[in-house]
Length: 350
Image (tube, rainbow, N blue to C red; front, side):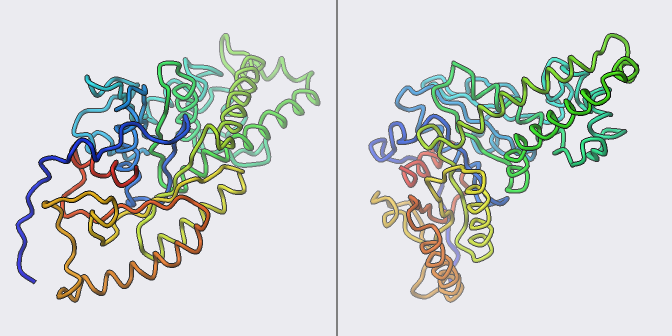
């Protein structure tokens, strides 16, 4: 196959790009690492903001790439990233969030390890062991990210929040947090009731001016907020969890597992996005272009073999995700970075 000179995308007809999106208040993109969650979240947020909907796109992935995708620096706190449309962005910094503690503002003794309460609940030296609670607490980074996520989703400045989640394992630990905190609160209250006479002695564990009772109050308040989040995530009128995958068998299998786990949490999945499909952009969107370079399936043996692999995966995905809104995004010769390419992706998702 001859070498190709790939020209960057200079423009796409504005009429072909969605103005706004048909989606509820909260849109979460999840899936394994490297399937394009950040790209989909960025494109969705950009399209959402185009009709004047104040939109925040936030990344909970410790390995952020939102700044690279938008080709602009995204701050750790929500900040406007476009002047012409109400688009805001934030990349949660788990280290900074942990410094403020799970509850923020140093609540419950700092809660990076939760101060004295953290030692009681989570073991010494900030490890995840939880001998007194009879279980394992999720990593403090996930808990701190959850606190900020709660804060941003409650922020009245934003009409819609689009979330670029961390890879599957981290996301599932976030979703497990309500159950874990319920268990932590319940067990700690039982301990307090059984050993109420020891509480004065325990106060020494919390250091000067720190009271374990205050720590329990913080924990209960945080658990109540997470319970509200859980109710929101389970409401299809408010939330669409979108699974992103690529047309490969392993990605299909992992996406199936994620769908099953989300069902266990009663979290509705409305949309499945299949990224990097070896199809022409016109076949996916109906947009006529002269710049899109599609794989040569007539004479390129490599392309033909890869397309066969993709077809098998697409067929399996079609069966597994029947009843869901399946979107396809083609494989681009250009790297998907910057607004021009995001506008093209938005057209595929529209």
